[in-house]
Length: 385
Image (cartoon, rainbow, N blue to C red; front, side, top):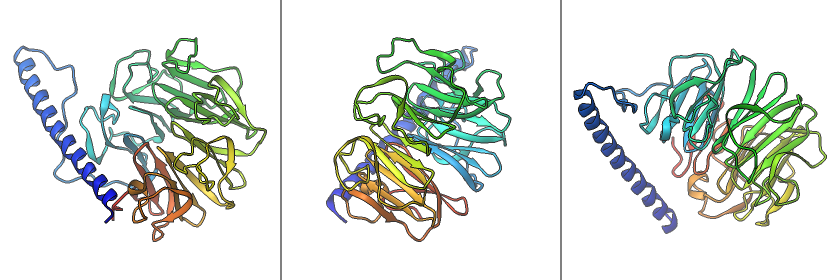
């Protein structure tokens, strides 16, 4: 094994040992505080750690998921599952305890979509209600407070939410009437103050898709036009400039965008003809155009026209084609490339060809893919069997 990979594996082991030590100390401190507070006749105001079960829960086939520093997944039966770092209650399981296995969140069986931000989650149920939980210092959840929530709380009373995206300190969503809404702390020098409840953005009512990253957002209209706003220091908005935008601005003149995904510094979009496009920072070849030259507007990734699922992380990109093959490019080789050499790859390279993949999601330093039978596989080195 290459020394670079071994060093990174050792670092991962050290990080896990540190996390386990921190977890033990946290459990001890919380337990001690609980004994002291209970003795005084008060109930603790912080969530108590939940014990790990003797037998780990068995996940149903997974139909959709989202990941950042933690992961949320929805089963075919409408159940919600979570794993990962649990800062501020991001997992929604009633605790602040990090979990290295998937555990069910509550008992509801009507979840339909979910997205993860930096340390918060937003989700929609089949009845059109909107729910959020996790870190809330900037009003990110939209419940009118800045209080962290450790279990899902309903946002307002509306039953007309269609799609939501979570970023850093900010959330964006679309209602069934096509209106666009945002809430949370303001960024990018926007003179308008943030809001702890959903506030409509503009007056247009023809929005059909939204996506959020840490400091910027994307939306697509019913006519297929692409719009973006927020931080743009690396050209990640794709408007041919590095000027940040406080409100949605049109990206190019095309009318065939169907999906877009973004990380802090680069973005990737899918068009209705199955072609793949990318823009923003390209220092590790994460745009997939064969160069390491950053792009201020969308550039074509290869010549295939059968891409179906796309995801981006910190310095890397992933995508799936119609034949179920999984492709990756950019940096983070030990994380997502599996057995490939430890090097940046500037064009799409197939990995793990023995599986039929249907969807892929990525966070800054972690990525997951779903197989045809609904099983989750974390992509990394070594690849989990």
